[in-house]
Length: 245
Image 1 (cartoon, rainbow, N blue to C red):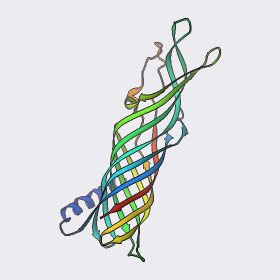
Image 2 (image 1 turned 135 degrees about the horizontal axis):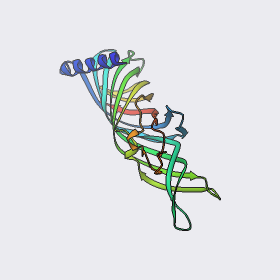
Image 3 (image 1 turned 90 degrees about the vertical axis):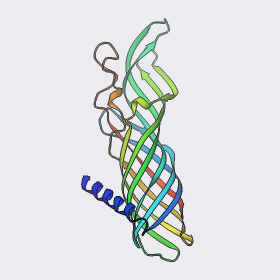
Image 4 (image 1 turned 60 degrees about the vertical axis):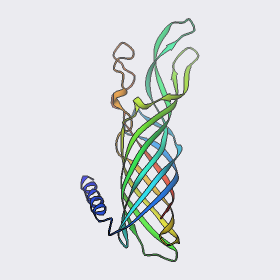
């Protein structure tokens, strides 16, 4: 993996150094996605998917007729729903406060600024279409995270506390790295102007959930809010739609 990343980085540097002699294209994209969490530890459970979108700039450095270094900058909205063991202070009807152990469910929305670094392999033009495969890496920086949360705990009649729009940034790691694999086509409109469409899979390989948010003694007896081994990645499938000039 590190060797592939180094190779793509080298291609990027070479393409920048020679961009005056190469064919550079700039474009825009607005692409819907569907995303979900994949648990990496037993105490985290995937509970559902989220719909989101990507939008931003595309930059293609056409190094040769049939391949290009493709990058850009995107605003990415992804997420998913997870549940995990949790402990929380609960106010009882008699106005006393007691800590309960139970299950928290969080429907999370994450927002990133992401830079893709990919190699695009193209066919020759067939009719008005040029087909391509794409492979590379993405690096995202989280700038916002929120969640609709609910906490279920055992009580005489069963207990549930819910809240919407909770700030979740402290629960999320700042950096998200991913592997990007995609297929698509370019439909030439005129000259260098083409419409892009395709599908890609963005597979996260770094833990999204921050272990720093673990409260070591939330109950006052050393049991904690959740297990310190609290790991999940976030993946998404993207319907690529864009225009390039």
